[in-house]
Length: 327
Ligand code: KG4
Ligand code: ZN
Image (cartoon, rainbow, N blue to C red; front, side, top):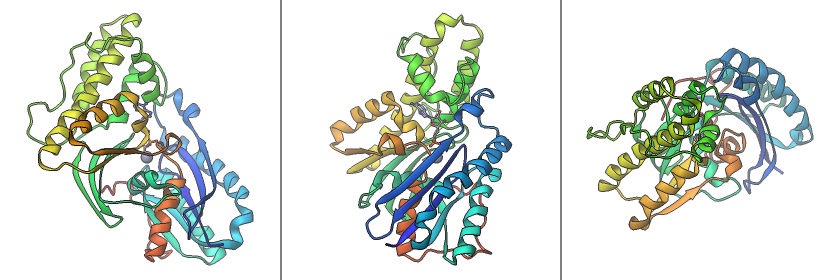
């Protein structure tokens, strides 16, 4: 058996995967999330996250020992993400590379999210992908692992981040996405008339900071009973923004296959609105399994197999973290 061990520590999830190279089969995957620890702060505290990775990663690694003799490479998320947490994974990967004398593979986390669509499956391109996570709101045209064009990205906050911030304003906890989605179920989507960001702009880009501030004003002037309506109206406009910009993008480019990836792709309202948008275009919608929407190491392992086959290795000296290296 020829295997790759992959490590993910770009934000607040410590995860390790073991993937079989010839079949892409996932033989082991374990993730320890830090959501509870960050919840009291209403967001991820980088130094706390780094300390928790330093505790969690060695624990998970111990469980991987039976696979060590078959490892042919070690992969790790090296960009983008929080500098202090990326370092935890990269340091561990380098140590494994030296100890077992196997090559290193540095994986871009965003490519990881794209490959979350293909865990234990063959990758199929071309594809247009909407990545919605805590760090990114981005539309990409993907032809292969080394041919990815970004056609739209956020100018400020991301879709997921805006949910986190709205949840924090309401004192709900972290991560905000699932909490706001739940609260919105009991609210009216048209009760609060927030403006759709960039609706007059010809740009195909995203922006969530203005909407976030409008919601802040609404929260400050509201009673707790109004929160479900604010949540529902916010979710509606945050989604309408994506739909408007995708409509614009589809005017010049209708993909045959469209995908939504990233932690916020779990949002059912967003999914349903995109399904509706795609229907007249007869484009297929593909999604990753729910357990692989949020950060995980299985997706890093899936990219690593592709990179291993193309011999995309990085030397010990060269592999460095690149916290801001987007696609
Ligand atoms: O991909 P991910 O796990 O981490 C990053 O790479 O950022 O995404 C986490 C983000 C958080 O901002 C979280 O609030 C958001 O995804 N999220 C959601 C939902 N579930 C998670 N946002 C909206 N609706 C959801 N159901
Ligand atoms: Zn992510």
